[in-house]
Image 1 (cartoon, rainbow, N blue to C red):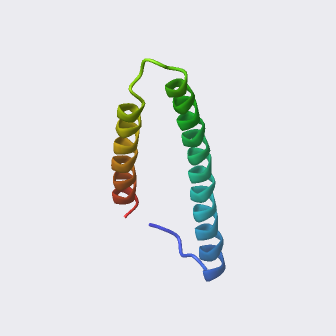
Image 2 (cartoon, rainbow, N blue to C red):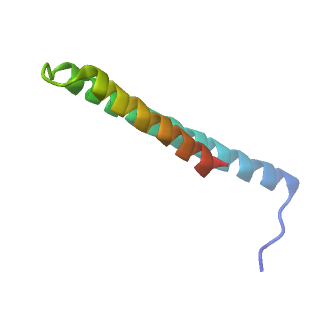
Length: 74
């Protein structure tokens, strides 16, 4: 049986849950930003690569990821 909770305890617990979520989201975003920067550098360092096609591939997948992330958080 789940123990009863006070409003103060509820407030503290939900604050902790939300703060942890935001902290992890920011850490994940920083990793994403670093990975995208490294990918951009690799694209820039590849003179034989079709730049327009590479950018199209990246933007297409990032767009799909944003939809997937929104669905996951809904």
